Length: 118
Image (cartoon, rainbow, N blue to C red; front, side, top):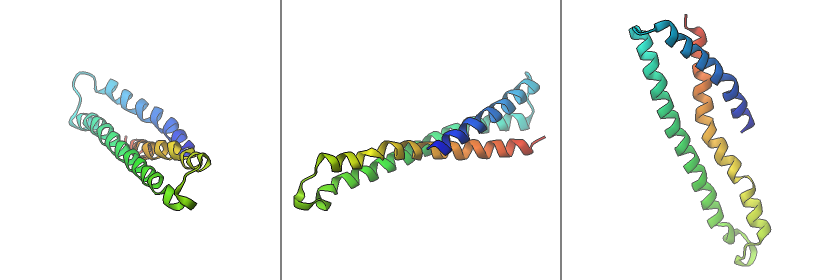
């Protein structure tokens, strides 16, 4: 999760700066290339949100499935508080990391792509 957070923190200002500067240069009459880039900006945010949401839901499904089968793994079909704590310890971090991964991937790809543009 830390790697994704740092990656987003480094890539996002670069991408935002490039796009705001491009909007400023385009002014009231953006070119077709500028309009395509601005449209891409919105569609990427939409896609990243849905990818992030789906990744977090899948990770929650996995965690709930593991929790449901925890009594089967335990001896005597009872679950101790320690077992529940051990299960829940990393679940939130895994869910957040799964949610940040698509955002990080898109922000890093955008920064790399926009660096190549003239």
